[in-house]
Amino acid sequence: MKSILPILTVVAAIIVLWYGAAVWLNSKWVYDQAARAGVEVSFSEVVKQTMNQERPKLPAPHQVAAELWKTTVEKKITSKRSLIFHSWITLSATLLGFAIGTGLGILLAVGIVHNRAMDMSVMPWAIASQTIPIIAIAPMIIVVLNSVGIQGLLPKAIISAYLSFFPVVVGMVKGLRSPGMMELDQMKTWNASPAQTFWKLRLPASMPYLFASLKVGIAASLVGAIVGELPTGAIRGLGARLLSGSYYGQTVQIWAALLAAAILAAGLVGIVGLIQRITLRRMGMAQ
Amino acid sequence: MTSDAVIAARDLGLTFQTNDGPVHALKDVNLQIARGDFVSFIGPSGCGKTTFLRVVAGLEEPTAGQITVNGMSPDEARRARAYGYVFQAAGLFPWRTIAGNVKLPLEIMGFTRAEQEKRVKKVLQLVDLEGFERKFPWQLSGGMQQRASIARALAFDADILLMDEPFGALDEIVRDHLNEQLLKLWARTGKTIAFVTHSIPEAVYLSTKIVVMSPRPGRIHDVIESPLPRERPLDIRDTPEFLEVAHRVREGLRAGHAYEG
Image (cartoon, rainbow over all chains, first blue to last red; front, side):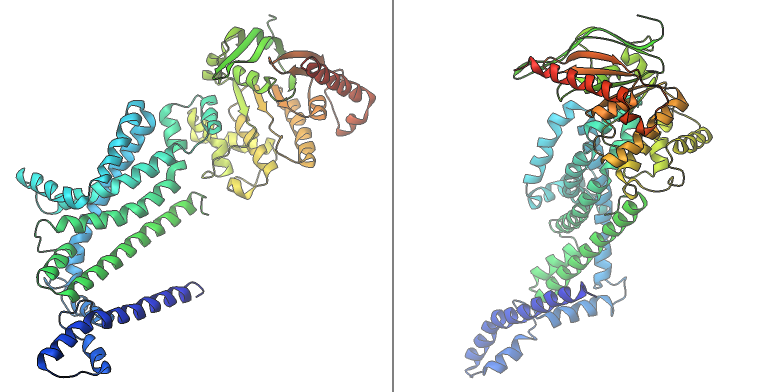
């Protein structure tokens, strides 16, 4: 209960600010309409008219909430207008991309820790890869893969993996290197093989670092999947909803898709956090 | 070299090359440790006592002289798992229970599961930790953690126990208790123990042989054969014999420092 009150306070403050901004941004259109019609409007009339415009600059919270309700609860999941349907499309690419990115990130980290040549060469490239704007490289990935006949889920997942492998590499390298000299000497006194040192010392020691990275990685994966939907003119997925919303000036639809993406991200990070808690507790490493 | 020497060092030297020039961690060290000895190494920081232990363990390569452990080179002895090493910190893995930590070297060395269980039970009994098998390290006091780490070093039945200031971080009351237990354990197992310490009473109380070392370059200043009997109650520390040995160690430490500056 103690933690719920501050959260609700912040949410309330955001909603108040949001309503204020909606009145401010949408009033121009009301005044323009009134001037064109040659009538005077009172302030209370203006406020009323900023709340329910069809294409507002900034839709009011209740409009977005109504749109969310309409496109989730009131639509069948299989409907092209259901946000749950679109969310699932994006989610599947996110999860596949996250799996690829995490696997690749862990493999690279293991290589970096165990191989000097990889230690010197891989990290600069990994960092360089993250300095390229994803929006610039995404269309090229789509086009190149399309030309070799790969379409649909996989190209989006690869863009998503491109964003999510990096935090995993960084966190895993730090985690695998977290055992100190004493622990490593200890393994040496037992004449442990490098493989035993890895499985019994380095890998378990890296778990807290891995989970911290996974939380960043899963959120990055979702961003990657959405961005991957933009340049293809995709007709399915949250990215497609954002895109079609902006084509037709459907700001309410854009904001509903944005909010759905935010809820999805929060849920994914929450699930990773839950797995983290359970795993570390079972390992006896819970904080 | 006599045949019963478990550890024998001749003209042993170790020089580290650093940016500030060479550092002589060990110079002309000659020492024989017989089977069943309890040898303490005492001296100020930088005298090479830990370095000597690490050379015995094969964790450092000497740059001069010879050393044999069980008649082999230290590295061969390490591969043959001839010794258990107890570090200054307990170094238990936080993700393993006490039993799991003790089991770790046994898993690495490929003991069967049944054998692992048997040995864990035996050594935890030896250090008075039965009943704590399923606890995690953070649930135990510092003294108990160090006992668990000793149990882990004993688990695979090495004849030699190398201990690098194992009780250095513990308070005096706990330390007294652990010293007494360690002597009992030594009497029961008949192991050869090499023990690094900063504490004169600890060295005198535990050892059959005390090696006093001095720094820069790290070398042996004096080797004292203790006249005390093997059976030692805690209050032996108030006897004149004990105080005499302690006095000689203190003199040795002072002299080792004197011609430095």
